[in-house]
Image (tube, rainbow, N blue to C red; front, side, top):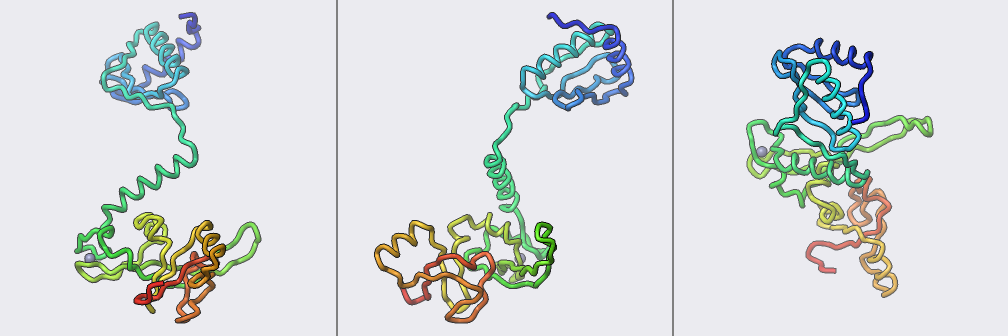
Length: 242
Ligand SMILES: [Zn+2]
């Protein structure tokens, strides 16, 4: 208890608190602690604060200064302590993906009258479809670049509506394993290989079925979606095991 507010600080605290409307919210400048005036009483209730020693100290000082100008500052059972924990970028991305996944799990059919869940549809057989071509401005190179817009389309099992999904949503919904499989309408299936799988195939001289994808399927001339191009894949024809 070494810190004591000076006259100016007391004056400022008094003015700020008395300027609060009934039930008005007041926060420290960085929003690390948030208070609410208790009705029109000279009482501040700590709603939430960051669980950090510096914020705890700030709260102690506000309590002391408040008491010196006739204000009671209290914590209640409902005071929320927010963990002072900053996720790493990787954790934050995982969290974000989890949140997205949760909201995608409850997304329903594009037909407003149908409440079939998209997550329950035959995502495995979604058909990657070239929707349109557009351009975007590449700021680094300072030029317009052409870009193909593709979308995996699934058919609703209840109402048969064709639903074009956002590729990033589709990838989250199906998970990495399914996302690495490309099924063409000709019945040919390409499975993206991991580096170690490629190395093993090459070492064992089992090169049959090993392909590098370009812009079209060499068997059926069907276009390959951009994100599969340049990848090493294993090619299988349905009904032709290996
Ligand atoms: Zn539907």
